[in-house]
Image 1 (spheres, one colour):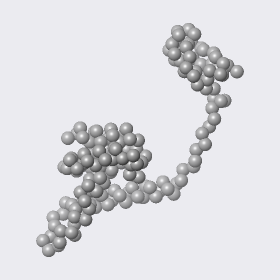
Image 2: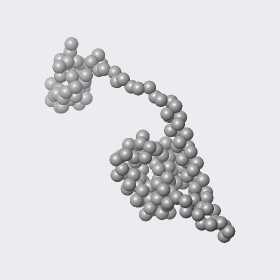
Image 3: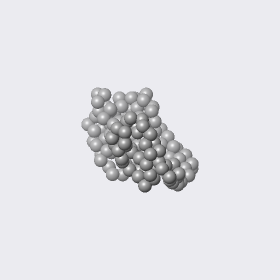
Image 4: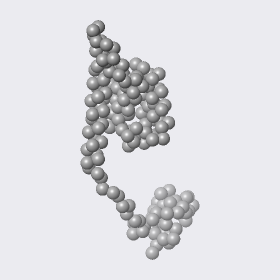
Length: 170
């Protein structure tokens, strides 16, 4: 059975045998390189595993809990410490600054990935207040071979692009 397709350069109908499917060839009319497609009858469907809806719900729940904790930490940071309370009673002293900044940077990347530009810009304003710490976190996150679970679905080049935008909008 022959494969028939149109040259994407000149539009001429090209016929060739199935043994050339999936390879490069030259159009007999214009002599440009063309890809010879595989006929649909020869393409095997991919066996996809079903989506685990309970895992998806758990992931969404964890992400929402992480966002709420980040917002709570941010609001506690804004409070002025009371004179009679020990400094350890405040979130800034309980968590190292790197962890707080890492949470903000991860939340920024998640907002960008979800298309929540207003939320991302709000987080970016907070991140830019301590850009030196943010740079360290962004560098580490882009170099980690295994990203944090929240960022696992964001391709590394996209994540690098998000961080580049964050750096450029100073």
